Length: 298
Image (cartoon, rainbow, N blue to C red; front, side):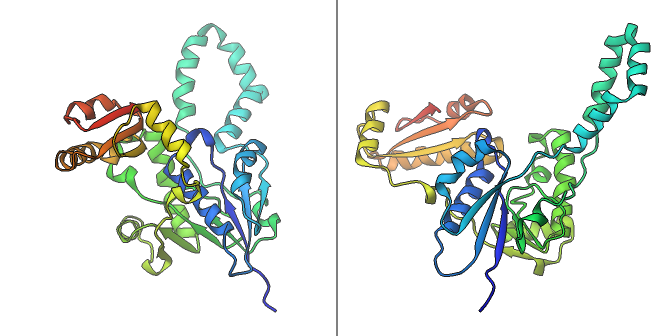
């Protein structure tokens, strides 16, 4: 009899930062939990009991959870050492008259600590799993075979949307994850070709697996919900709802323009945009005469 494959999925995501990666990760966990045609068992790694509370409802019978103890980052370890040694206390006491200047100098130095690839402290190896899947862009170098999902390299194509520290972190973690992982998963052939070209990764190592729809774990809206939504936003005719966050690279302006063109041809369609503004969404709206559309802040 074959031994069931045990897979750890690193799902350390924050509910407060529910973006595309978090939605895809939750959809993946939910879909794998519905499988009944295999003997695989999944251990879902979370970062806190609070995360476990809102993730538990989507876990399937073939899944269990494990809370990873907090491990201080490289920055935290350095700051703890700098702030706690006798030498550092002596320096601060001596330079107390120049405290404002010291603070001004110290902050840029601390903020420029170069990121490093995290090494496993033995937690992943202690789970009794055969492989670790990391679908959240983070990467941890451990002794187990690893599957890594970098999603995309948008920081190289749109560096203007990222801070230097974020670009430095991505350019440390992403190449390392792609090189050290046993398998790399991406959602499209374009992203695969991009990673091969940018990081010189063997194409045979990268698998193209389209990401499942995040709506897969959401129940079908009931008639009561639809009625309440129409009443809340005063929607009289058939409508389409587009929830999104207005990240600059998401090309919402062409989408709004296209929906306006369609609306002029099919006047019975009313499009409502529920966008959480990251940039200035009014700039998008001002470029499009949305006679058959509306813009609503989430």
